[in-house]
Amino acid sequence: MTDLMRTCLHRLHVELGAKMVPFAGYEMPVQFPMGVMGEHLHTRAKAGLFDVSHMGQIILGARDAAAALERLVPVDLLGLSAGRQRYALFTNDAGGILDDLMVANRGDHLFLVVNAACKAADTEHLMAHLSGVEPVTDRALLALQGPAAEPALARLVPRVAEMRFMDVGTHVWLDVELWISRSGYTGEDGFEISLPEDRAEEFARALLEMDEVAPIGLGARDSLRLEAGLCLYGHDIDTTTTPVEAGLRWAIQKVRRRGGDREGGFPGTERILAELEGGPARLRVGLRPEGRAPMREGTALYAAEDAAEPVGAVTSGGFGPSVGGPVAMGYLPRDLAAPESLVFGEVRGKRLPARVVPMPFQPTTYRK
Amino acid sequence: MKFTEEHEWLRVDGDLVTVGITDHAAEQLGDVVFVELPEIETKVAKGDEVCVIESVKAASDILAPVEGEIVEINAALTDNPGLVNEDPQGDAWFFKMRIDDLSVLDAFMSEDEYKDFIA
Picture 1: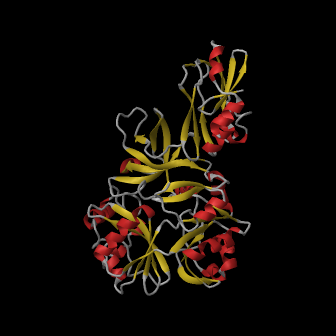
Picture 2 (picture 1 turned 90 degrees about the vertical axis):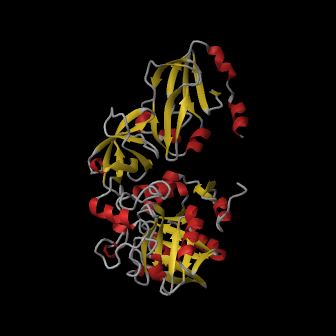
Picture 3 (picture 1 turned 135 degrees about the vertical axis):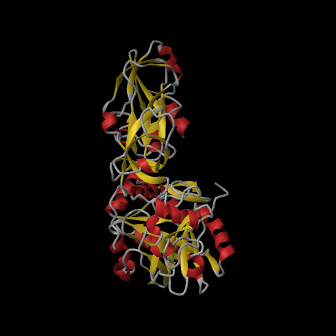
């Protein structure tokens, strides 16, 4: 793994017994000795600490950053108050998705968190359209997720208890400046914390010293987000899926839709606005396979047990430790996408029934 | 007990061979969440895929280590796949097969040879 980059917590991961794997150009912990299932359940029961320093952090410092960024995303950013964060999508001219991201209004600038695998392309894309684009290269990013995340983090930073879901703010621990948001990628209440790389290990150790906090790898991060019904870029969404097909219409506020004050004006406007009104041809759905066999990414989906041609495919799937059975998501034609609709996934040559269900699979516990 | 390079163990009792996966294999797989067992009375050739094991991470197969007939399966694994992690070299055996040619077993590793193999 010589060509891989390492996060500033690499030494800590190895010390904690992590199994390291290549991911998006980084050497990352896929699991710790507790194992994927244990880590998943620990996060839902107590608090899990994730190193997500491989993700891209970008500051947009121009005074007109919100208006300028609205030209790249179908999201209301002028209406995003200081101290708040919102989910967004970079779209392309065909209405496809280039990346999904978080945008925080930190008062005098916007702060973006983008996917690791997309960060170079996103930065280039931003620089081509905006001024004042500053990639943040000296800060780590940690996530603390689960019901004990608040009491644990509040021991170090008491004021986080006052934050609600999607609030952002600057906090201080010892002499370290923390940029904290109350958000995450697990469906649980929790926080994401950006902090200087040279203090990240010390901060992580302070959290890990607490009984309820355990280190969590990418394996459990994936099963947690899947149960929460959250999209993984490059799998559930990509340049061939539109935000409306992906069931992300909630991310497109009224002001950017037909008849809104700032209607359209983002790449792919025509297709996305038309799909918002007329409905898309296909939709991302949640699936519960009826047996115990997981339906993994790529599993072909059929309308009937003996149908000749598939009508869709699974984009993410596996075992949901909290659900206690297999869960999956994938795309189906609109007429098959309603809850209770029955389809068949082909697993090792056998057509197995799966029921369309609403997502999330596991109720979320955000502190709204 | 004999061991294969595919990380299976074989316990021989007359012409009956019980097959499971090793402690090492179970650890590598991680938490097992699904097991698909063969049908009883299936005749299998060496290398046939006879069982599917899915862990939280991925799916993998158990191959028939020798030619023979499946005569018994461990149905407990279907209801409780986690048994594979709890007791891989004991209660979590997968199937028993009857074989004609016992001499083929000589080719497999002893426990010490297997330990060297995975070291």
